[in-house]
Length: 80
Image (cartoon, rainbow, N blue to C red; front, side, top):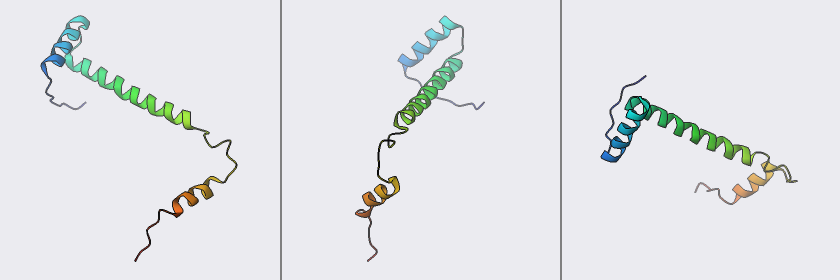
């Protein structure tokens, strides 16, 4: 575990202090839990987005590689 120092505005500090008293956990522990939850939520959102796009081309009949090459054709810059 790494040690770090952060600055909190009064509103956040009061919230954390209140949560600390209610739960019996340290402010540091509460911060770690909140950060872990946010990281997991972000990861879950990314995986959900990947799942939603999986198979998006399954009903297409054209060759994906050729389709991409055609799109990119007009965007190349020639060396002068």
